[in-house]
Image 1: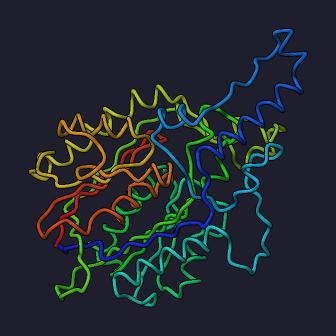
Image 2 (image 1 turned 45 degrees about the vertical axis):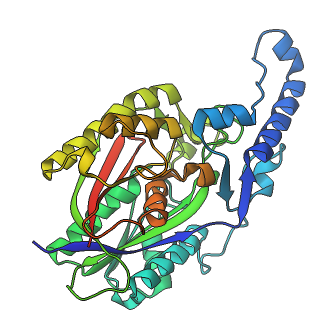
Length: 374
């Protein structure tokens, strides 16, 4: 069987940072405005007053302490509560493609490859800024890559699902090298006016280069792919109803269901056992046990969720050496989270060490990639 490796990763990080204190102050100002405007209805019991948020609530609920965003002022404006982007003409590189290209170039540089050596580009993200043409094809053109490109959306599992497609393409011989790019502008589909989720997301872009191992010495460490596994199970507990049918339904395009929403407690209760069982079963199919794994790079949605997944697998705790956390700095970056963890926390592993990249989220969906340092 063809040996496939991950030879490079890249990360694009926006320049703007929003701290929890800034975010909470903005949300509380918005809540105060709404409560003042609806004072009579609140007094009459027709609507409930919006509760305040707090830094303590945010950090206890998630472990998140800040997030990077593409546009800060609009999010923190109590009269707006969403980013503001100027529309771009069709002949200008789109926003998602722009940050995707930046991450892709970083991955190629790390791998010591040129864009012309790439045979395929997969753009894998939790949302796309347009229906067509595919973001991947725009990224492909901007890079100067060859072959083909296509988009994938499996919410927070998009990157691992795309990794399997990339790995299979290389194994089958249809491509020598495939870029998986995840430009996640989650701030644009986050609901900043909802106390239960206004702190969850951040913006970022990641990229990975998957290629056939040519057996030649490399100046940078490579990671052999031992196996991949994907699974889905339908659930409405994480949902976003924004789509092209909306305009035909004569509904409010700004309605609450047109942005991210979730039943957080249900998601926590149901996804943790699904993810832990998935990883253990996948490892077992490769003749491995959870204790054989040197590091877990898990989806970065919630600190408590990752703690439970790791406890079920190895009896330890997330963070530090076993399952590093990056959500305190980046927040939930959807499909990019586990890739950021892999990008930032792998250089200390030794040849032969085994690791698992695993993402899980809306769908429900879960994807795992077992790797070994060459």
